[in-house]
Amino acid sequence: MSDHYEIMIPMAKDQAHLPPEGYHTLYLNHLDMGLRFPVPRFIQNLCDHLKVSPSQLTPNSYSSLLALGVILWFFRAPFSLHLIYNFTQVRQQDVGKFFILLKPELGCIKENPTSHKGWMNLYFFLRLNAREGVSWHCDMSWSKKPTKRDPPLPAQEYDPTKFLNDMSGKCFNAQELIQEDLLCHFGFSRKGVEVEGDLDIAFSFLLTTRSVSF
Image (cartoon, rainbow, N blue to C red; front, side, top):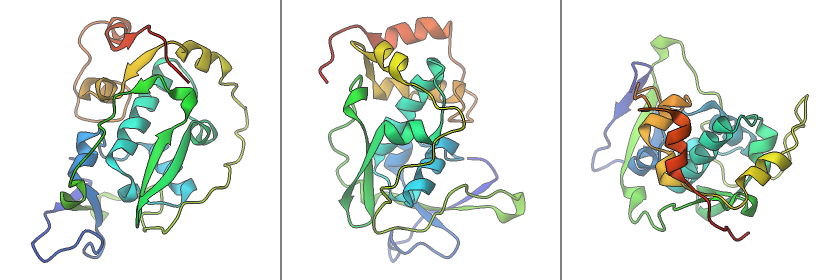
């Protein structure tokens, strides 16, 4: 964690939905599922468009989004909000909690945990260090429900057909895609862990060419 952030460990009297002034609630399982700080810009952009806070997302939302991010970077697809939005869908899990799923077209990304039992009990408070002159790039306030409006088209629209064809028949393990070395290589973590060996060879171990049902 950089000096841009301050962490407060909650006390017994604290409640996750009532963080101290200036702080936001995050969860340990968010970190387990690949979230690092700063929150990747494409995730902040998506949250800002949906009008939900990153703190309201379920753990698997992060592993799904980050796995998608790694694959998009590797296959040199653009990171437009329009593309990310059209590859995902948001649903409500509980009051104030939302999960982001990848659409069936991206059924090649699998192996998210089926349960994070008790994850909402394991939280911490986080705020930006105002002295560092940094800011969030999305609204961090909690929302009751996400917006359903489509984002504006990018200046140069991208046809995802080739990307989806490349993904057809392949299968990626989301938990392997969010390993620290890959998160660092693609700019989603700043821990400085390097990929050992050739990246193309590393990806060949992560990918299996078996039939995927859509």
